[in-house]
Image (cartoon, rainbow, N blue to C red):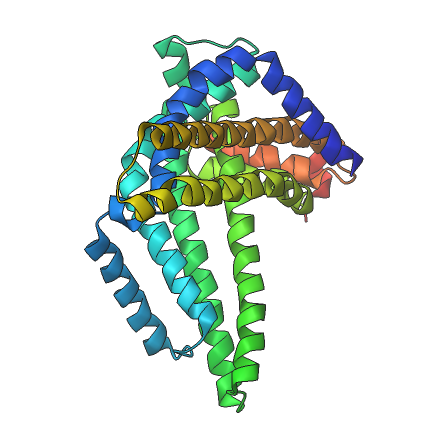
Length: 326
C-alpha cells in the first residue's frame, strides 16, 4: 500500500510541477477525443443503423455459440460490445492523431523534464507510439476473442453435464463476467504500459508490449489498483455527461448554450483524467525500472534487457546472468 501511495504522490507532484503545460496545452489536445467518447453515450450522434447492425451480428453469434438467449448478462455484453466497437471505429482517426500526440507530449515532458510545445519535440515520439497503438489494438481485439471463447467453452461444458437451469446460467454468467473482466483489465494495463515504454525507450510495436509484460510481471495488483481510481472517475464523468447533457437533450429536444458549456466542461475534466492516467503510468514505469535491477534472482532483469537487445538485432548478455539461464 505504501508503494502505491508513493506512486500516486509522485504522479500528482509531476502533474502540478507541469500544471500550466498539462492543463492549457495537453488537455486541449485531448479535448476532441474526450468529446467524441462522451458523445458515444448517445446513439443519435452516431449512425444508429450501423450500431443496430453490429448488435444483430453479435446476437446471431451468441445464439450460434449456444449462449442463453434470455440471459441479462449476454444482453448487456452485446450492448456494451456494440457501443465499444462503434465508438472505436468512429474515434479511430482522433485516437491516432490527438490522443497519441497528447501522450507523446506527456512522455516528453516527464522523461526529459522539459515541457515543449514545438512540433519537432512533440512528434519525435509519435512513430513508435503509433506502431505500438496499432499492435495494442490487435492485442485488445484478441483479448475480447479469448474472453468470448472462454465463455463459449464454459457454457458448452456445463450444458453437456446437464447444468442448464436458470440458476446455473446466472452463476455461470457471474463467474464468466469476472474472468472476462480480469482478462480485459490485464490486457488494458499492459497496453497502457506499452505506450509509455514505447515513448520512454523509443521502441515500438510488439517489442514495447513484451517489455511492458516483463515490467508488470509480479506487479499486476499494483497496476490494477492504480488504474482503478482513474477508471472510476472516467465512468463517473460519463454518467454525469449522460445525466446533464444527453438527458436534457432528450427531454427538451434542443440544446442550449449553458448545456453546451457544461458538456465542454465535463469533457475537459475527462481530458484531465486521461492525462493523469498517462502520468501515473509514467511514474509507475520509472518505479518498475528502479525495482528491476534489484530483483532477487535477476531473471526479470535478464529477460528485459534480452528483449531490448532483440530490437537492435544483436545478442548481448551480462556475464553474471550466463550461469542463471535455465
